[in-house]
Image 1 (cartoon, one colour):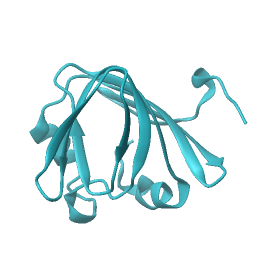
Image 2 (cartoon, helix red, strand yellow):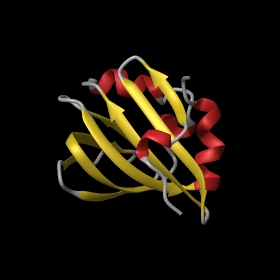
Image 3 (cartoon, one colour):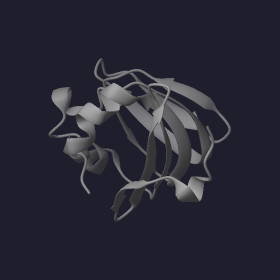
Length: 120
């Protein structure tokens, strides 16, 4: 399977955040995401309606541009930078002081379960 990133379906197009997600890739979903600078408090508010007030879905990906600060349920924090591949276990929130662009792969079943929580 293959697709141009411009042809990925837009799942969310809100001020400062655009998510394009294609489901149905062998049980995985592929996403191309862009996020403007966002502080930790604003990012945390996005996850208020989610279980544990964090994203429960694991993600694997590549940071194309910018950096992503992460905090996990256990309080641990880390930063993913441009050019790095990553794995994010479920139970995280992410924000960016400079904005970011990244591609990620997520289990389709788990991602579908939280799509209803996402702002449109």
